[in-house]
Image (tube, rainbow, N blue to C red):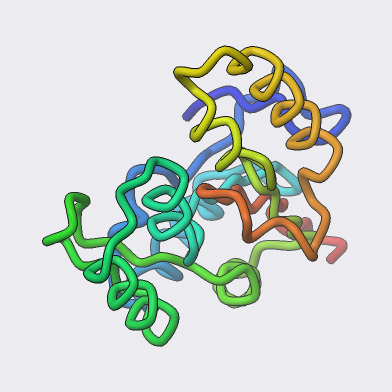
Length: 173
């Protein structure tokens, strides 16, 4: 359990959150994990599901000047299957596309699902400027844009991390 100050009215409510498991490579395992979060939630209660964006690694490597031929090849491969290569410095993990995350949540039984981009579309700029003279201004702008575009469908996948938020069905659903 964790606290998530998400959509209006949810602040200070305890929300079962599925984090720490984006490494599940098999879709059936991910859906089963979401079903378990739903199972332990009261009727109508909120559930949050964390995931890594399909584009997180390549964008991070570009923003931090670590992008090379190996990362270019990994970018092309990652687009096809979503399975991260642990040899590039991160664990085995599944990197989601937004429609996949939505589909998994809905298949598990989550209702009224919205996917939020955690860092927002300007996080690569903030990452690149982190140690420069304009770091504070760039970070502030990136944070403001993250808030404005949190659930904008055309931009959600630009965030490194995704948070799908929905609710458990009630007897009336």
